[in-house]
Image (cartoon, rainbow, N blue to C red; front, side, top):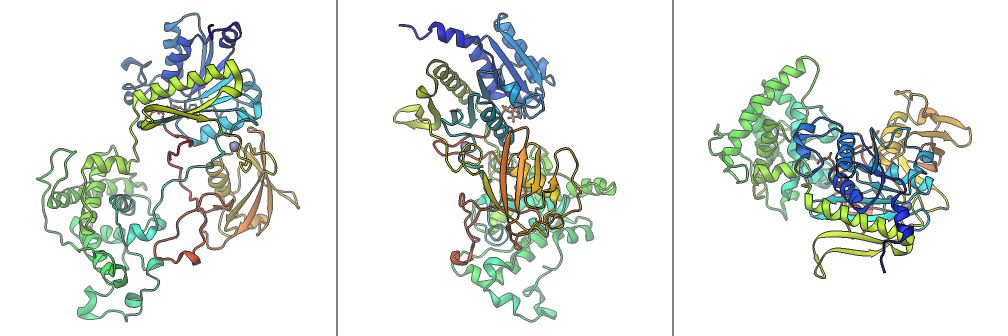
Length: 569
Ligand SMILES: Nc1ncnc2c1ncn2[C@@H]1O[C@H](COP(=O)(O)OP(=O)(O)OP(=O)(O)O)[C@@H](O)[C@H]1O
Ligand SMILES: [Zn+2]
């Protein structure tokens, strides 16, 4: 008996939508064409970059800078001219891809690389009641699962993966892993050459973990000879020291690796159970020992590299600053990368943490998980198997498939039953769509609430927000918000209730505001009892509210439990 029944063959002629023509998308389009799908529409907003060519095999060198969707479409046509394939060079979040448009497809395939687009497609597919096959890969890991309204969990049932963050006091006072030094070094770059952000202060912190430490705070101000041990220059920021000295590398080095470390040593209780750091003095070393980027160089060499990088970046900063700009850190800018590599290695050495190579630091600092062509090929294969199951037997036959990057029971690819919808999911769970959000209404501006909380945090595309009761319009998707107004200015208080409606996603959610004056203007907390954050080091856990704090940061492509989703591909 063949599985290619007439019904199945008929299914292959129905229109399918492929969202994303990158690593997984190229493999998938080829598989769909070879499996016999005959009506395909593909959408991708990007153009081909030379770095895509190693794995996005539908593209060639001559296609660089051309539309991915267009070239992929032409390549599929060349494979089989009978296939009716069309494309859009644009975003799936654009108006064209509304719920009605989606209803023509028998299945949608996500081959995306970011949470926002994935969440949006999840919502519009649920609203249109069209099955969505979601997929992702990161390094050797990959997964595929199908989302069917009311039958399976959706993309957002497990909540949004939180970016790994480290307690501020660990970064500033007591680094214990190399990555803490990398995070610190990237902040130093911004403090010296970028947009100064007070939340990214790099100097020792006398707060939090050190609240009990009276040694420093209670001592009278230093005078005369004792100055070096008391509060060495902590009053001046590294930016002030740098600009007052014309970015003198010796002065910057002295502040970061001598004065600040000496200051930390005065917080004696920090070092009762830790190995204390060791201040360094600048010796004017050169970068002569530098060699292969894969090897770890001697400390003196890093000092020389640090010196060269401060000199060059200081000059660049002076040029751009003269016209009101600042520098942005970029892992592919060799000098900026060298600065971070040198600063993190010197700090690591001071804190007795083994140093690392530029290559290792680059992948830590750039948060890079390599895209691997064979993983994408495996994922695209799994997607088509799921699509065939879906077309043949519907939801009963589906499996969530994943590659864990290692053999499990001698298999590279494993699968599990599809999970049912999470009753608590605010997208597909049914019942009350309510979210409790803590903000500081006096500090948070409506514009921040719109961009950071609703769009970045909760993945709304075009939210309209009304204050329930007085029916005040807080945000209208058709008008710009007043950038000066706070939530308080619009009458929001603790327990205020908002109706948040997104026409594009056919989604209405009730938001209950909880006032928390400990939060700053860009912070918010989803108080749903879901993900918890560890308390700050040194703060008794009983006194620390163990809640999720989401910041105004783009979420990283976080990964992975058995069933969880993969954000990159
Ligand atoms: N909103 C969107 N609408 C349409 N396509 C999108 C959207 N967001 C992302 N994409 C596309 O999804 C694809 C994801 O593929 P992939 O992860 O291989 O990314 P890439 O950008 O090609 O590679 P890399 O990030 O490694 O340079 C990309 O081609 C990207 O342009
Ligand atoms: Zn859900």
